[in-house]
Image: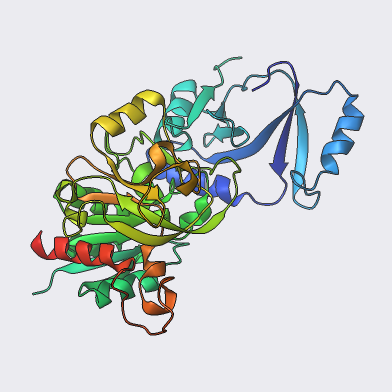
Length: 136
Length: 256
């Protein structure tokens, strides 16, 4: 991950079947989770104005389809509370941000996120998991 | 009574019919077991995880299927010494379940068949797998000759063995690389590898030798009609085709 670039998250605005599948599997694996969100993270080095960057991403059909995607500019280069980032060790695939919520729509605790990563979301032989700190 | 082989069908498996057929043509008593029939799996003597895209490869290839209720019986069967073969997506599932190379705890993968390199694209290419272990090291290869060459089709986007260097060292030290990619004449070099796989690996075996995971599809080069070396057509097994591996598997099931 490039810590100095501009971070953009690309999310689905249609139902996310992968997130739903992850939700069902995580429950089976004993993680107490009620909702899962997922977004693909992409860093951009360019220092171009934000408006121009957004237009450029939205016109790149290889990563963005306006019929199914929305994008979100992110502050900082670290996961939020309740969020775990799964990064490919050899950077062959973009990082994925997972957000997990409990039945009261609260972000899952750091230990629960670590469990989710260890049991399903991260294969440590090819990925690393970065867990957002609780309370940040 | 014949020993029974279950060919597992997850949502998204797509090579189950030809897998059952090649096993039957090799003398095996094979049948499909669907994901809704997981409770029946314990009755079987051996398991084959066929190719496809189980659960649409969501999260990672094999990641969801590795935790499917069907895998409970497979994991128990592996511990009990039942022969288990995974082909392509089946191999990815076995790695995600930690059954091969099996150098860590079950459910905690220590390696992966992941995105091809140098380009992370789907590869469809005829390949040759060369047996890289003593045949008797793995029950499923025990009826093959040393250095046996098995023709097959590589058809995957995520077939590259990848793991940290220390994990790969364990794979080598434990003699877990069962098959490497080779040229049709048996020479082994990087040009024969279709996907950038570490150790030129095409297949991994567990320590006990009863679980084998191979990325290419030998069932797609098994009969005369789909075997490259034969000009005549026919639906009989080709003597030099990929069915040799399934015949060896069936022998392993019979003697297990």
